[in-house]
Length: 196
Length: 121
Image (cartoon, rainbow over all chains, first blue to last red):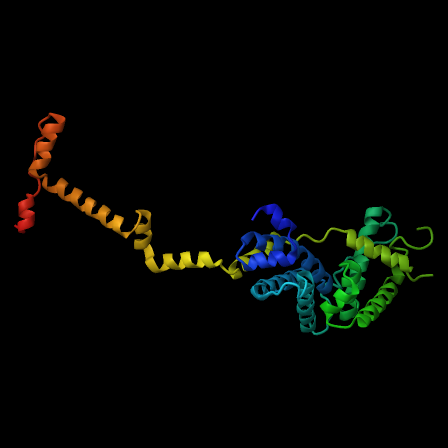
């Protein structure tokens, strides 16, 4: 199959091609889905090595599911988010509710003077956001990341998390409030507030 | 006011969305692709051809290269005849060399004659 056709095909079409034995479809799906799944898993787990393991396992389940995949039943990306969510949840529970291992290792927010340059302030803000997300309760973190960082719509998040849409709205609202509270003490250091 | 404004949280979300995703390591991409190819169903046609090769082994592969089992039998017979002619140098070979090349070809008796091979002497 020509390279252009593969790169422009929807995920479900690529999965059907993969099941039909087309190697180019395997390469394109890997290139397309792994970075997305890894970004999501890394935010849930705050641990790069664990996130990579989760992504490899989730992709393995996708390859195995491909021959029986029924077009139109589920979006490939939604299905993958759901598997990654479940695998990450298992990992977090296996940690014995110690919380993400990366929380304590999150970069310290620099003081106001060191963060004077725009690039440093941006890096500080991202580090502070990651740390605050990692401190959220598990389900709130999943909902906030899916809604505000992965850009999914509430009905899709409901499918991923296997809950109702109202529950999604409640989780994202509570998650945002908790983030605001967690970041409250760092507004000055992050370049917000008076004179910022 | 010490709580971040609603817009400030939204601004941080927008910044995070715009930031490039962490690039997966080459090792992870290779592992995922290896899993994909290992679990990929084989096309029906490829299965038949692979199974056929596996059943026939090297002999059927050789026969296929020569155009089939019949052709392979002919090639084998010709090879055997060449070896015998080289060993026993029958008289017609030397007479043919005389007629075609116009030179005398000495026939040296290094090996037993064809008659002795046939007679088992």
